[in-house]
Length: 374
Ligand SMILES: Cc1ncc(COP(=O)(O)O)c(C=O)c1O
Image (cartoon, rainbow, N blue to C red):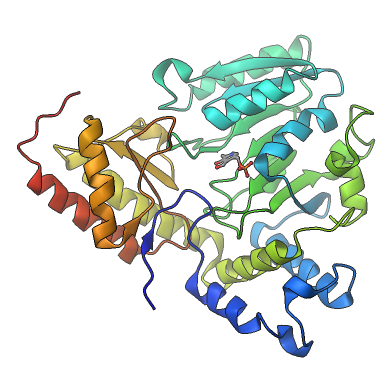
């Protein structure tokens, strides 16, 4: 079996034991004579699969009883479009813009009300998380003034390789976070948030499932806007157990398996230790490199997406092309920023990262005479 070192930002590497189990159960799921792909979502067999996925996630994150767990479709993109429809009751919410996806979420919100820009790091091409004391002061001022329905952040910025290392202090204003690319990569205190959501295709499973964790009281009255499509109405989705319509049955099954794998391999504290070990191996190398440099400011570095470049687009392209010869895949940076990106999600092993580090050192040795153009 030839597996590559896969640094994809998502859909991303899955644990090999999970893939093997899925292969094993493909033709005949636990003696029922059919694949999960062929099973009715209304069957008791399938209900057990989704219930088990939720129960495992609840254990992993110690999710309090007053939070609902949903497995929806449409990706993070549909969720951030639906958030103002559900929560913008007084028509005013605050957004911290730290990258492309936070920006898109902010733009969506402007369709429904006043989307206050609390802070942005666009002036330095999103290489950092804005100053937290400034963010907190702005939230306090807005909350005391015209008020805010919620504060929105994108906790880990997949494209730019930055993350929040502390959460904003929102007082009584609910915090809403896109945690797509840091979900399950470290412990998370659910009670600090009003709503968390994550596209599963990075750390939690296959593309096509979005996990939403939302506090009961925020959805109790139904959506803020009567025109909200039924699918995006979180109260209805919660009442229907994520089965308002046919859910992504197979994707939820994969999530359940990944949740169990996280639990069986040590839980979230162990994930965080391993993930920082992998990320810091690369950050350390970047700090000492003459050729490569990291693009994120040191105090804003991501646990999951390590972004770097040489400063020379041709050299970057040569690095990406040469990687394939070492079975290293998906290290090209996002098309918006260029350069390189290594995503070191839970299923990426230390051996994968060591293979990348070795290739980086070899590449640097071969190109040590090339001038840096930045
Ligand atoms: C942090 C973050 N938010 C949102 C998205 C958009 O996700 P989707 O393609 O599932 O809509 C992504 C995709 O990579 C992401 O990394």
